[in-house]
Length: 383
Image (cartoon, rainbow, N blue to C red; front, side, top):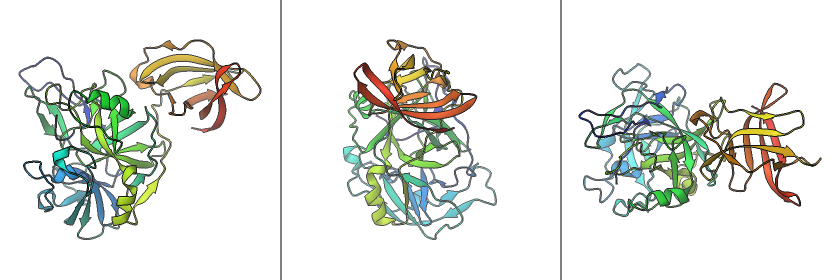
């Protein structure tokens, strides 16, 4: 089991070769102009959540033997903000020393990664950089698209070691995986997945988008179309020393679930901002059609990690829709998946629903009626 963590991107891991075989193919350059609250902790990352406070992972401060947290913060200092390229420092870069580390009291590295969260107090407040907003809602639907950013490792060598941290800030798209599926995936790794954790993977079974060594402590967040962001997780751990320390599609990466620590964060940082979330931005190529009879064609519906193509047809004046046929499995390309997702309450969330040339997003609620399981109109708005 890797104790890491993480790089951004898809790693192409094949048969053993003499040279590193992995490279980022889904990570793209990001900017601190868009994400100004991301901070670099010299080998880890963190998020500015208040003028004098950074949120990060407790394991970034483990001692050399990984048996306890080293409360001296010198080896992660100073914290650097507004740096897009760590080798070419610009005039706008801000560096601030830290004066106090507060790991979660229930974090114990000898017992794994549960409660892998910490607060770092800065020596002086940073008042000209916007702070991040944190997620307060603990329930996040499976297949919700998220974004991870960082400067972690970008390659894995033949010894399965993460190498070549990125000089620039990178970002990659990830999607939530159910904790049940995540627990099953990690059974063989003898790693416990708890409700305090959030699991993420790539678009599909062959998508290796991931975080890796050097991204630890950094944020994963939901991003809206207007670039509003809400941080949902903190890079914690993932992968296997035998099958791939990063970018193994069979082993989702694991993140500390920020919402579960709202009370603890507020105890130390009362000014921290929390939100129930934003409406996540989906791939622009997602399109579901609504015809003149109000029947809905959905090319890519994801349910219980399976992808389907199906139709809903309107059956009554109360806006109830039934499946027109048994769901047929579809080989949707990765950038079309998650156009429609099914919530834990069986609600349908549709993106880019086309009607009379307009693009809408709509929510249908599950409604068991006499004719059979149906979905009823709940709400809509323009994309």
